[in-house]
Length: 287
Image 1 (tube, rainbow, N blue to C red):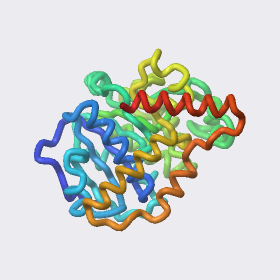
Image 2 (cartoon, rainbow, N blue to C red; image 1 turned 90 degrees about the vertical axis):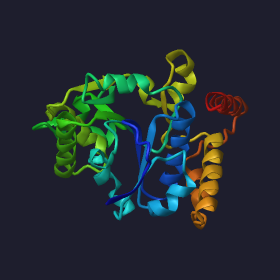
Image 3 (tube, rainbow, N blue to C red; image 1 turned 180 degrees about the vertical axis):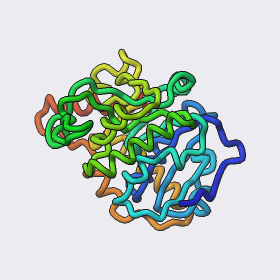
């Protein structure tokens, strides 16, 4: 993996994305735009296997400050995620999954890193289903323990964060679960790093944001596979703009891939009204 482009005004604090494959690159670009719209001084970095930085960087100047190109297969994305510290160019970093939108300033999170090595959102309830049946920590099942969501991880470069990511990557290799959040449970318990458990404002699912986002003050919306249609449309527009500027062919099947992750129209009239209300709220939040 090589870093081929870096902004001359590299910030000491920034956001890094892992974007393997056309779909995740398109989503990461949209998320990066929300970072820059709120605070242009926050650096952005995208780690991708889609195209070389020499192609992507000129087309996204002002939006992405660092491009890191990887030769790894898209299916190996989690192997890179559990070692994302190796590819983050900032002293203080907020890693964001590509399926996020930044709705509030991140400055408080960067200040928290003066006191902690790592910060990640806590869910105090054990995992259900298959993710709750994995054994960690010498025989405990993940369903018997609290867990942490890896969609937003803040970390400060140093020995503490290095210990944390070493513990995570080692646990990921040993446990064997495809989900990186299973091994994250063990990493949090095993590491010597100072880990801060964040509240839901910093990694808020779509349903909770629509219900209580204004009251809570959502900072990062994590929509996962429940993408609102206005977001999908903006992702398509921004990706097309980037590809035109870079001279890259259109991404095959990108629109179809987005449709699979997009909330479907509701059939019943009252549910349809609710769906339109949800989209109106998202339009308000993304202005």
